[in-house]
Length: 158
Image: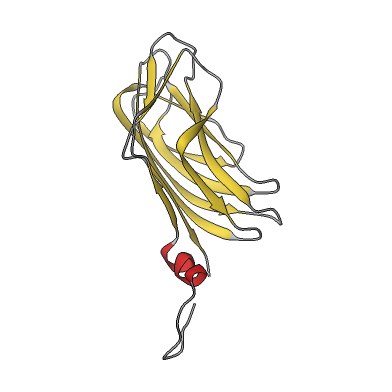
């Protein structure tokens, strides 16, 4: 995006440069649920026919029996391709996984765990919301939490 001398950028142009960001301010807890549920804070409204650079840092705590799984909801026709960096359920080493919009990733539980996601989301002709979903990977009567400090970020490609 370019501006001539004296141009005044619009709010939409500033948002395009700044990007869309959401930061989780509270700990969210589920107990005994392996059904993906929408995160209360980690979602962003997206425009139609747009490609976004995607970055997420998810900090979580879960027992090693339930572990945790992540997925997303998104507008009809949206596609994504991203890399998830984390420890797979039952694993012991950090690994990178190629993901797409329909991927549901099971990650190792533990205290103060984290994963990173980076890639792209491309919307079709439908605007809407991209929202993180999560749950226990194995239903267990213990706490599984996504912690404050987690975030999502989308920046339009120009």
